[in-house]
Length: 98
Image (cartoon, rainbow, N blue to C red; front, side, top):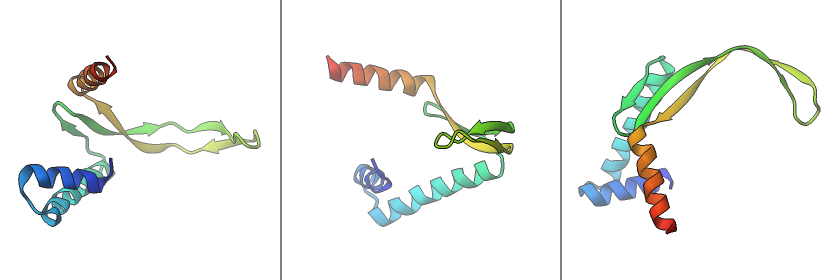
């Protein structure tokens, strides 16, 4: 599913135009991105949480050449899914299989 598909689904469900819906979706994504860049966490109950995690410096290996490469410490965004969403996905996909 792409961002355009999400905009289409939300527009159909809410009655907003696609242009209005795209502005809302873009605003949401920009807000989440900026909050993570500022080091803040975001929690959406029933969906999951977005956080920034610090990765320690380490020695890595180039898989093509086998050469060791030093990787500086850096920050990465992570997403942790909520228990409700995880169990809902599991139950729904198991029901489709059977």
